[in-house]
Length: 210
Ligand SMILES: [Zn+2]
Image 1 (cartoon, rainbow, N blue to C red):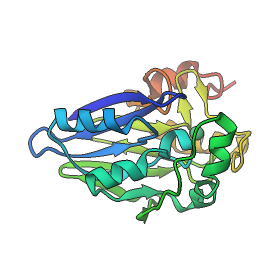
Image 2 (cartoon, rainbow, N blue to C red; image 1 turned 90 degrees about the vertical axis):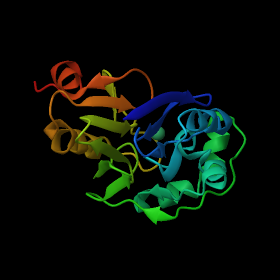
Image 3 (cartoon, rainbow, N blue to C red; image 1 turned 90 degrees about the horizontal axis):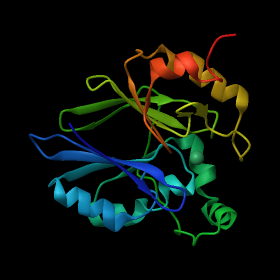
């Protein structure tokens, strides 16, 4: 599997560009910004992008989606519980002092247990509310990889003090959903370094059982 992890924008959101070597089909997850650089990586790997997947509707994850859709023709997917947050992109831009990306249109909602597929690549959608109502993680079982959005970080978890956030819900998502994955699952968080489920189960202060 081709997997480029590229931090984009002022908040350095980890954008993932994932593809199949044999058929050159691929998907982009969380194209928050820096679309010209993302397109250069897509060209470098000769990928045909089939899907644009958004883990949640924060501007640093979704801000570049329309520009990427215009360049690739791929549909944009987001869980419908984040549509309200998506309508607040202007306010979100004001919070962090960046220009508004304008309106983002979603082509399809991502439901819990849906599959997202590009060629032979297949990921299960795990609805993990808490950081936002519509936060999802993508689990690639064949590659033992989890794209975690802002639900789980190395040594920490997503903040829950923004609109739509809930500490109780994120703890339930982490214990009920993410900790049921195998320990050797590699976790690609929405920001910062990679980790594994086993490492977080052992040492993440929000996850260790007291
Ligand atoms: Zn976020």
